[in-house]
Length: 525
Image 1 (tube, rainbow, N blue to C red):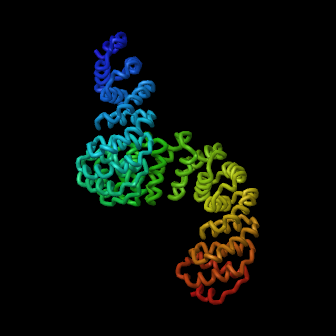
Image 2: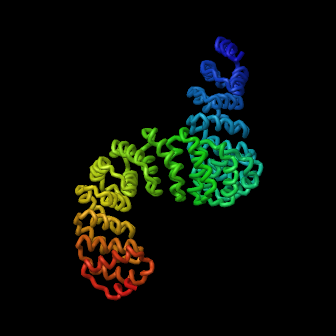
Image 3: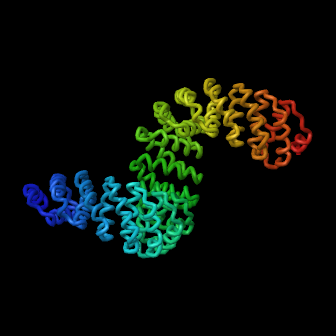
């Protein structure tokens, strides 16, 4: 019936009036029966007689096209002009439905959204919870800035929070977090409401709600506890994206639920072939962040990643490798496959991606000479773009894997000296350790680092003190003032030095010919 009707409608397309068109598109959308040729024909007919439609009719038509996922630039452009002109006479439902349609189709209509925002703000109390949720979501989805609207919607949303559906709560929180608009009072009220009826939230609503709190940096420990119980019970209803977003949220919020992470890992392994690149990045990052190793999970993800390695950006690969390195989980296949992609794309990678990638290979002691050669050539040409932390990580990586890169070590000296006071104490210790380990003499850098270290020697922890002294002694670089200052700190904090740090410290003083009897006495004890 719907097939033959569509054929007949297309034949009579020029005879359709506005009511016919609204009823037809509504019917096909309601039964979810897409016939592209029909919707194309109706779109052209609607545009021709657009002035004959009411704002409510236009909203219904746009909703139908959005529900069917049928794009029509001409229709949406023509409709936006009429809707913008009539926006102040539209009721709340029409405005909400219209904006929802544009957002769903990701169709830009900035003039309409600006006009709608102005109108909504003046009548915000007339909007019901569903409309508020739809509207705020629409602005967030199309990334249309409307701070006045977001501000105005907070109070009525709080007042009506218990009348929001569970999906409505999840959606409005997602929207505020996505738009990066802080609304702590709303998030507090929504948390209390959500806890009371967390069992009514489906898997997507749970995941989106948790994601919103984590993204907004809004603490809600009771909500996270309640949500973990629901997630564990209904874990089989969570798809791969919901699983990834959930563990990402818990990790970001610093809320570790071992039982939750255990059941999620089992479910992820079951759905391993359904994971996309974003899911994989979020999952491994989450488990590494909370330092919760599950070898079976990381093995499965490693295989999945290798299969679709070309789908990952260089930044994604760096994050994955970092997670594996942080967890100390070896994967020859993953690191080998990643090195080929990273080598190929090295000249387009930013400084952070390169530093993190090299750090991961060095931490896992995984040989990748071709990658390290390519990275060295690229870094040298852009060395001034690297910040102190990145310089320290990179030079350390080369020293740790014993990969010769004299041009890189030479190029890094001058920018390191220029930025020496911006290095962290650990950063200074690490880069000095790297130059000494690589047996690359850099007297100007060691002089500059010595002066900077003396001024803030109290900020160096025991390992940083020991490594710094070891570096000067190994390099044969005299720094008597530094050794004197370091001895005072070491004596005060002797109980924080482990056996290796104690051994390296006295070895450094002896090698440098710098005797501190008080230091040697406390070390012996």
